Length: 64
Image: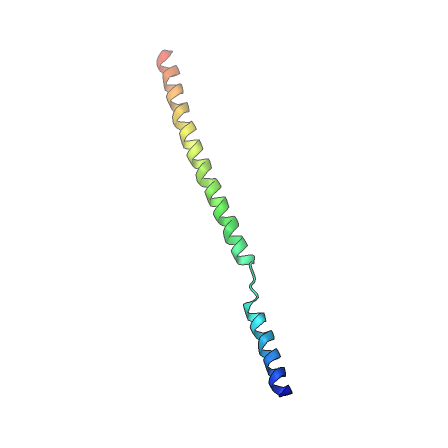
């Protein structure tokens, strides 16, 4: 009976080790997604500002 209990504890420990997860990969993916989202927002803002700036400069050029 004691051997069964010891075997049970050993299997329980092995299962706990396998179920323990390393989240460093998930964290890196999350940071990558955040960086990509920030890049998309920056590109969108710069595109909008560039278009508006181009319109203003063309109006100044035509006024001259």
